Image (cartoon, rainbow, N blue to C red; front, side):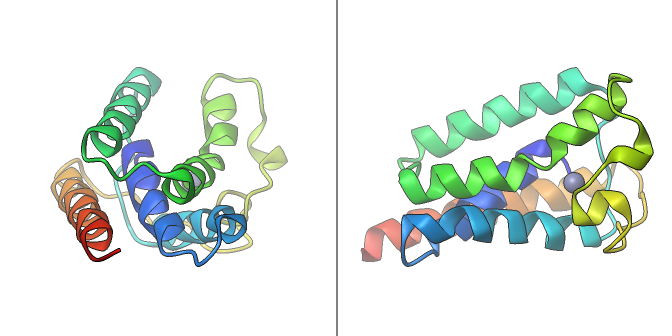
Amino acid sequence: MCLYTHIIVGALAGSAAPHAALAPLLGLGSHIVLDYVPHYDFERVSSELFFGGAALLLLKLAGVLDLNAFLGGLFGALPDLENLLWKWGILPEHKKIFLTHSGIIPHGREVGPRNLILQTMLAAASVLVMIGMKGFA
Ligand SMILES: [Zn+2]
C-alpha cells in the first residue's frame, strides 16, 4: 500500500492499543495486513513522501495524533523504508527482511491506480474512526 495508507491505518491500529508499548506492534501488524491485500503503489518516491507528509498533517489537524497514534503510524510505515532503499538502488531485493517484502508472507498483487480511491476511502474512514474514538474517550 501507499505510505499514506500505512501511516493512517497504522495510526488507527496504534490508537486501539491499550498501552503505548503495544502501539508499534499493532502498527507493524497493520502493515502486514495492508501489504497482503492487492494494491497500487506510487511509482515515484516523491509522491509517496508528499502524500505521507499530508497524512501526518491530516492526523495532526484532526486532533488524533497522540502518542499511540504516532507510534502506530510510524511503525505502520517503517517497513517501507527498505522499499525506499531498494527503489534508490541501495538495498538489493534479496536483502529485504520484512515479512511481506521478503516473501515469507505473500505480498498482494499489483493493481491499477484506481485502487487509490479505495486506499483514500480506507484512510478517510480510519481518520473518522479515530475522531470517534477521541469523542468517546
Ligand atoms: Zn510494505
